[in-house]
Image 1 (cartoon, helix red, strand yellow):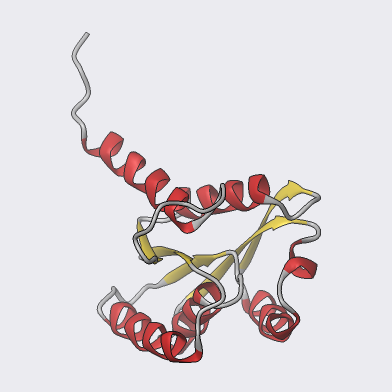
Image 2 (spheres, rainbow, N blue to C red; image 1 turned 90 degrees about the vertical axis):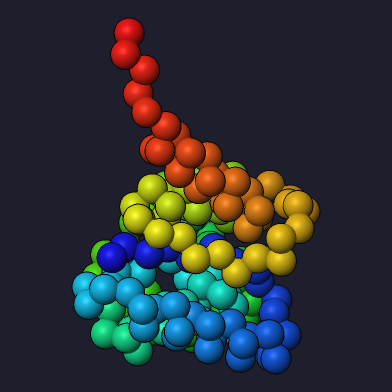
Length: 153
């Protein structure tokens, strides 16, 4: 099953540990064929990617922009490099600057490529464009459109 992730960055160590355990529990319940689709951002994305690999799945990375890696915190670079090298596919969005537009385009791409979305989200409204709340709203809108019956014209 192709599963995407969206989630907050800058999590505390305690919250990161809880998220890692929750991701392991969620992924253990999925089918034998697991593909994780992620932008490999620090925190939730990287925790998800590591969990996918622990559960024998494959990774697909979506890179928002040419300058994306440089915009990640320094402490996330080594994990990003390791995980992107383990990806079976890398999809590039074509943006140069790693900004909100690039991040939202990449997030939409992860959702579009997946059958399921895991959101590590506090439930609060978006603080800036391209945030977790925006990705959840995008996915929710797709789900509603996919479930509505087609009108007979």
